[in-house]
Image (cartoon, rainbow, N blue to C red; front, side, top):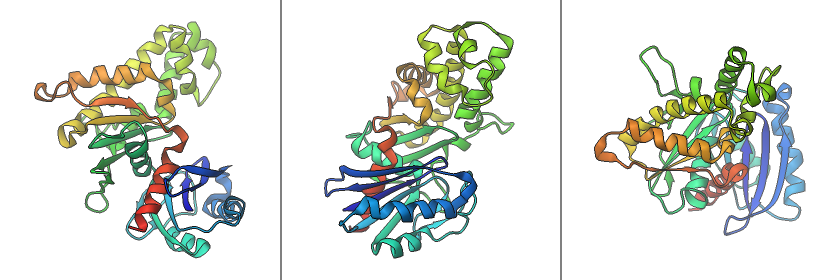
Length: 304
């Protein structure tokens, strides 16, 4: 079997995949931030025997929530969990499983999963953007992750939206939308969005879709503003990389069609006329399986 692992700031997933990379077994754990990287490694050690049973690992792939050296398997750091800086994850996991390992950033890994099995299937190039606690991205060209020169990655979250240094992540991440909602309902203490989010101090974005379904005007304005900021950042991707499809994933993508349609409409306003109608804008299909299935692809790549 192939082993795929997703190491995030809040969840840990381990999956076994068959030769066709279908997930046949899964262990899912909640990460305890207080235990740090060592705590997560302990969870992996405990989960592996239950996951494997009598199976042996042919190769492993890991999508890690932070910058990594994909060539060596060394972690640069985690922006959410202490205890990962300079850790040789590839070597550690190789000793644990007795098999070769390939490690990449989780957004790159999810991009590979969506390009191969999800909303980007049959498209080339595929650009993936994840809207969660942060904003990450991945570019897949000819079926392979594009890394660029070290330490380059597809850091869409750090693309600037103005000369003052405002970046996409500061406008389009989950916490940025949380902040927009708190500010808006303070000024407009009426309507469904206010009723859903009043008194909260974090996580408000998860109610945006429900407020939109109730035709809340404030929610509609926040969606338009977020979609326009994201589309403006993505217009640079279009001008430089010309993806055939842009796939939107992460927690905010669960808003669904209203977000996809708003981004697609705004993107057309920000790209040059010669590139119209522009790339398809699609919602991720694999949801929580994007990183694990991408990790299984990484594992298969190890074997050539």
